[in-house]
Image 1: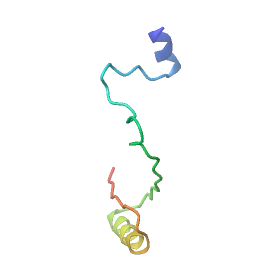
Image 2: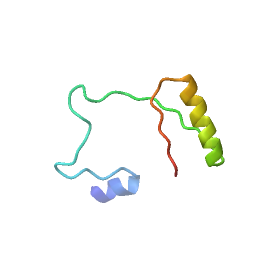
Image 3: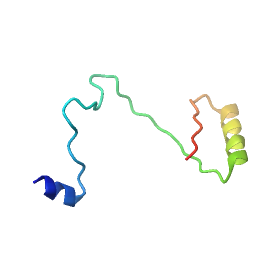
Length: 63
């Protein structure tokens, strides 16, 4: 049965004791926007522009 799930693309079961979705009301939905920039300078400009016009939490990510 496990082989059947693996072939169907299903994820394997988590081991016992693995963290999962927080219990109770600790979980809340979050919404985000990703802007793909051509270079670091453009990323800085977008970040500074967003910082100037919104009060949302901003995060810089490099991949």
